[in-house]
Image 1 (cartoon, rainbow, N blue to C red):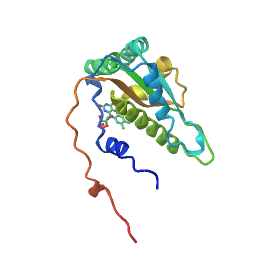
Image 2: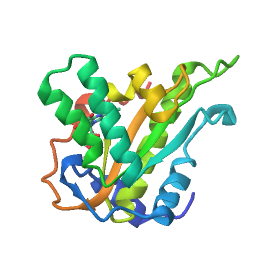
Image 3: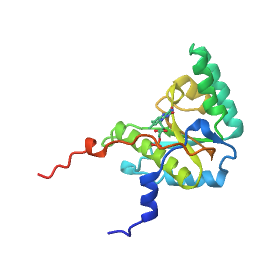
Length: 192
Ligand SMILES: Cc1cc2nc3c(=O)[nH]c(=O)nc-3n(C[C@H](O)[C@H](O)[C@H](O)COP(=O)(O)O)c2cc1C
């Protein structure tokens, strides 16, 4: 049995996100973000297909994407509140790691498994950011799936989408924890 890692376990049992809108500057630098990417890339990945990749957004690129999101939201006739909310998700993010799901057809690894792997990457990046002492939040929205926006703003290919934007910055508050699931209600212990 491997060594009991009490620190890691305590982190996993108490971790929680910081809402994106409460994240402020300063943002993690390239070296700090590289650690998060390394943690993300250690995620389970059936047949080592690497069906995901990263796009790191910082200062100028966040401002550019925010403008493109706003323009696309207006073109889609989104209500003004939604235009502002979706633009601000990028304009106000100190930094963001977009985890791109990039599944490819495979004989034995179905697309759903490849997308699950991308989700695992999102959680690993998020947890690495939190464990590094940053505030972080996994967000999505229509911007994660809108093909024209993704092609224009992030140069995604047609089969790709954003599994998660992991917004990262300095935490301004530590919010009260949200209600957590009732494990007993979700679990069947099957003994025979
Ligand atoms: C795939 C996915 C997409 C999400 N998108 C959003 C979002 O767009 N906006 C939002 O407020 N929360 C979103 N959430 C929820 C938050 O990431 C997160 O679940 C919540 O803040 C509580 O996180 P915690 O359990 O780490 O504390 C999303 C979660 C997942 C798994």
